[in-house]
Amino acid sequence: MPASNAWTRRSAAAVGLTAATLAAGLTGCAAEPDPDTVTVLNSATDTAEHEANQDFFDRCAEPLGLRVEQISVPADQVASKALRMASSDSLTDILELDGSELPQFAETDGLRPIGEVGVETEGLSDSSVSLGSFEDTQYGVARSVNSLALIYNTELLAEAGLEPPTTWDELRTAAAELTRGDTYGMAFSASPDADGVYQFLPFFWSAGGDESRLAEGEGGASALALWKELVDSGSASRSVVNWNQQDVNDQFVSGRAAMMINGPWQVPVLDAQDDVDWAVASIPVPEAGVDPLPPIGGTVMTVPKNDDRERERNAGRVLNCLNSRENQLAWGERVNNVPTRAEAAAAYREQNPKLAPFADLVETARSRTAVVGTRWPVVGDALAGAFQSVLTGRSSPEDALRNAQRQAGEDG
Image: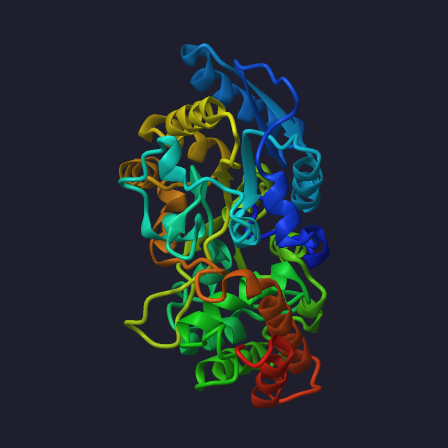
C-alpha cells in the first residue's frame, strides 16, 4: 500500500533539484491565494482515501472558519510535484511526505519547524517524533504510523501444534514444520526495492546491524544468513526475490504461505476473505529478551515556509486539530494504523485487540533516516543489493555487506 504504506521511497531523481533551488522555492503559495483556504499536497488519489481525508480536514477547518483543499497525486510523484510547485512559488500550505523523504526537504531549510507554527507535540511517541525529525528538529507530525509484524494462519499453526515463533530458532523450526505440499512455512518480500528493504530491516536491526557501517559487526551477516537459510531449506520460496509486499499477502491469502511478514495496510484484504483465519504476533528476534526493531512507516505533515505567517499559523491550527486524541484515534481505526499520541494509541490497542501487536511494535520501531539522514536512499539501495546477491547465490553474507558498504560510500 502507498504512503500509509510501509514505505514508498521515491527515486533520487524526484528530489534531484539543488537544495538552493528548493530553498528558494519553498517560500510561498500561489499568487493571491484565498486567505481562508488551506491547501494540502498529498498522495490520497484513491477516492475512498481522498474522501476520508476530506472528512477529517473539514471537521477541523470549519470551526476555524477555514476550508481545506487537497491536491492529490500518486505517491511516487509527491516529491517531484512539490519541487515543481516550489519552483513556481505555488507550494501548498501543508505538504504531506513519506517519512523517509522528509530529510531531503528539511535539509534545504524550506520547512518550518513544526513547533513554530503552534503544533503541540507533547505526548507523541518517540518513534513518530523521530519519523518527523531531521538533525534533532521536528519538521513533521504523523497522526498515525505503521510497521511490520508476523501474520500467521491460526488453523495451520494449531494443526501443527505450534505457537507463533518468537525467536529466530523458533522461526526456523516452525517454518520447516509448516512447509507442506504447496504451502511454504514463511513468506516475505526480498524484492530489490523499497518493499524488500523495509522487510529486511527488522532482522538487520534486531541483530545489531548498523546502517551507517553496513559491514561492521556480525549482525547484518546473521540476518542475511537467516533469510538465506529459510530459502535454501525450502521453508520460503525462492520467488521472494521478486515478491513485493502485496505479492506476499496474495501468497498468504491463497494458502501458499502459513506465516508472513507484512503490515496493517493488508488488513482490508485479509478481512474481506473467508478462507484463512489469521492473527498477528511480534516479529521474531535473534534470541529471547531482545526487543524487536522494525522500521516505522507512514506519512508526516509538514508546513513549508511562507512569507505569509498567518497562512503558516492556519496550517498549524488544522494540524493541531487533526492530531487531537479523538481525531488520531478515529483516523487510526479508519486506516488500520496506530495513533502517535500515547493516550490514543492505548485506546486503539484496547479497541482493536487483534491489531494490538502493531501498536506494541511501533513503540520500539525506528525511522530509516534517523542515523543516515539524506543518505538513506543510497544506503537502502545497497542493502537491497546485498540480500539479492545472497539469496541468488552470488555472494556470501559477509562479501555482500562489504560490497554494500562500498556502494553506500566510505561512511556507509
